[in-house]
Image (cartoon, rainbow, N blue to C red):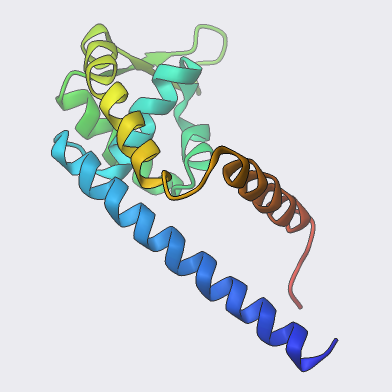
Length: 149
């Protein structure tokens, strides 16, 4: 591997990291205007789009430490957006379930959320977006079984 290849890889990492941070900061500011923090929004969106989820698995699906899930679920429950539901087949498992109020809330805010994200991505053409999606998937999937020594 040449030093030019290494420099290019480092540059890609830096550009990718800065781009993600910039976009993510804008999305997080938007989410805060809804009265939620990004983690609360992620849990609510997951339950809305994917249906009831075991609380033990939510953290992995939204990339959150499992210890934080209880706190986030408590906050969303206090807001009336989700409820806990016991699994009828296994009492050790508790599901997060979106309430009607939670559904109404996400249905009210999500169209604006989608438009704002589209606006953040508007610098790229449709073709460039497709290319970026494919390249980032390729990069991400290549890391699944890779371990750094």
